[in-house]
Length: 303
Length: 273
Ligand code: SF4
Ligand code: SF4
Ligand code: SF4
Ligand code: SF4
Ligand code: SF4
Image 1 (spheres, rainbow over the protein chains, first blue to last red):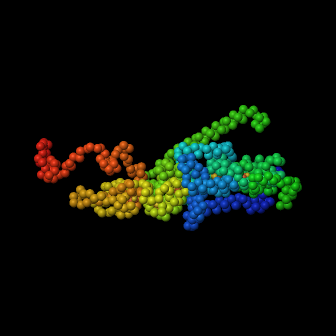
Image 2 (tube, rainbow over the protein chains, first blue to last red):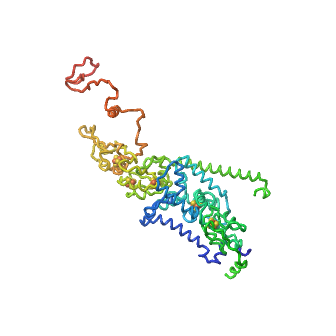
Image 3 (cartoon, chains in turn yellow, brown):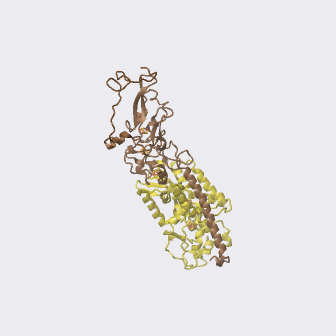
């Protein structure tokens, strides 16, 4: 174990599974993020209007409406009851994320995620200190404050500074000074607080974790008995507090990562050289029994 | 299991309360900052006009989710979304500048049809009823028609010609024997489309579309116009008023100073006659 822990994070997985194997979900995630962005850009760039609008509200193939439920909710507390199209769009989005995990939005769609991931990568490279680490539940307080501000001012308050929709709208319609907000988020994560924005502050992420609190799609540490305590999953997980209850659960405790904070990004699956984690549904309580205690080290030596 | 950890329970509770208070305080401050920003962002510049059917500005800011669907469906690229930091309305909300690209008043109003939230009111089914603003001839001193020429461009381009804008004939005091065809906007019919402002031939338009709040005054609640009330009632508003003869000039009338009229019994001192 002492030899392994000295390996850089993810190195062991790369040796075991190859670089592609150890970055499968990361690559898929980047593809997905690019895909959702390009969908919106096909129109303005190539005149292919399959998807029109922005993340706040869109129309696909002229029929399917999608609406950001948090933006709509702010409008509702601000005193406007929306037309059916917007409501329907929000319901579709809520049902989808309710099933696949609210924070799938964070790791697979949100355009700010690559920005904060880049900040975290650089933060790691530079070996910077953790910095300010507000409580994880700070974002829920902020979510409350955002709704209160909307109600008090009668406007969709968060949209005045929301870097997510600003960046997205900026790319699709025209940037203005929206890039400054994106730079601010990057610097905040780099200098002020490690994983600060997405991990502690962003009320959109907080909202979506509430949406996906009972989601079906989950990561399970089903093979947790094979865990060799390399701690790599903790190092890559953007919400590392979610791992322990599942991974370190006593026999009889669920191996499913039930915390709504988990973004279903799948990085833990990637980075684990002994394949402890896997995507499954929330009622899958299977734990792989430890068959051959000596097996994992043996494969490692062979590699 | 706070007590089991060896720490007295009260320390934990105190820490919890302190953390909660800190979080609440921080959020209150952040919330107030956001509130301040939101109030600030409610100021709509005068040259920024909302699309047809837009709810009153206060309601609009609650309703519009800044999706840009109205912008995309406008066939004339009239509408734009406000960008952060530019001198426009609240970031991400749709508007247009009449002098750049006016609204062409599409009969099927695609922008309204596109709006998923009702920020552009679907009740607007006739574009002639739109109230994006009101055109005001802001500068009579430079308007070519007021100078006695027959420019008439603003009048000619108006999609609601002869209702929203008319040419009112009046005497030209400068030449003494010509007419002025004064372009005159009638707010009831003007949609604020901005065609007139866009087309004004002068380097800076002398007719401009202004938002209602700037363009219009308002009459006091209790004011009544006698002639309207009379028409509504179909009879004089006050019963039993004697209709005195109108004093028209000319022979046979009782206009005392008119030539051929009755001789005035009393003359103002110095009145030449
Ligand atoms: S936490 Fe917020 S900014 Fe980060 S990925 Fe999720 S929605 Fe995007
Ligand atoms: S537990 Fe795994 S899937 Fe969930 S956020 Fe962490 S790394 Fe991603
Ligand atoms: S009425 Fe037509 S031209 Fe005017 S804003 Fe709407 S879509 Fe554009
Ligand atoms: S379509 Fe409606 S909600 Fe979307 S930007 Fe236009 S006015 Fe706002
Ligand atoms: S804005 Fe000008 S062109 Fe448009 S309806 Fe009014 S007077 Fe006519």
